Length: 187
Ligand SMILES: CNC(=O)c1cccc(C)c1Nc1nc(N2CCN(c3ccccc3Cl)CC2)nc(N2CSC[C@H]2C(=O)NC)n1
Ligand code: NI
Picture (cartoon, rainbow, N blue to C red):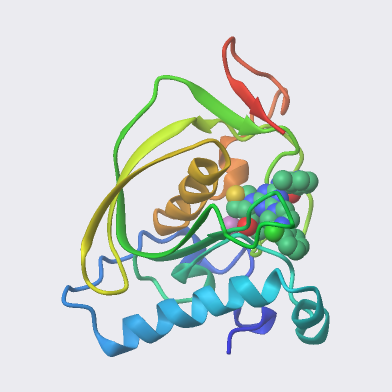
């Protein structure tokens, strides 16, 4: 089971490497890794398990954060409405690729956090508001989906990890809260 000790932190060169595509059909090893990554996210969002295992909450995780330089991400975005247990997006994505995106940009009003960054880095992380994404799912099927707003932000953050990009690379050093006209701020 994955816990915080398995997650590498800034300074580890794997976080700055470009990860390798996984071969399809998926190996048993890559399928198990995807399952373990998804289990970590669910545990991290469970108050009892997160406390027990001392996990930081996350809605996304990329294999390079486990010192595994493979193009695998897991995302598990709970529904904002606590009454509704259905997540708005839950998937393990192999070889995810952004095919196209909106002109419209967006950012999280509260900035972004990362399980591999043990510090607050304030500022707007401007990303595409909408993306069209292809990936191979855990059954080996090719998928093509469209995402927007928070889900799109999370997936872009995790795909950045596959390309050695950290969220704060996108923050304007002169003015971390500078925003061009028309950027959607997502609260
Ligand atoms: C500096 N200010 C901030 O971090 C920040 C501050 C306030 C609000 C937001 C919205 C912020 N931003 C931010 N908050 C999150 N979480 C909110 C808490 N949540 C969570 C925590 C515990 C249980 C269940 C859950 Cl659901 C887990 C997810 N996650 C991300 N990111 C950036 S994209 C990948 C994603 C990620 O999983 N990071 C580890 N950013
Ligand atoms: Ni991250």
